[in-house]
Length: 120
Image (tube, rainbow, N blue to C red; front, side, top):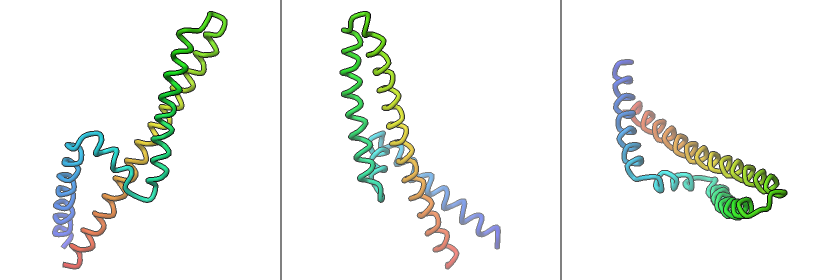
């Protein structure tokens, strides 16, 4: 009986691997779009807005750094590095939330499939 259950689990995991392959084949935009499916879509929109705002800030600070006089280069350079670090943190958070949404969805689907298979 355990062997049958193991075979069913292997089959379900193979099916899910095929689904994930189609997700990966869709490209980066399809992958990042998965982050908006779930309860945190408004927070994800806020994260993307923050990332775009930081991009504008980086462009502004980069311009100010490269056109600054020698006395203020350090100030603008430090602000530029801080803006880069903030944008890296926001983008990492976006990818972590996207991965969390995908993994939790896949776990729920696996649980449903296993419960369905155990009834049969």
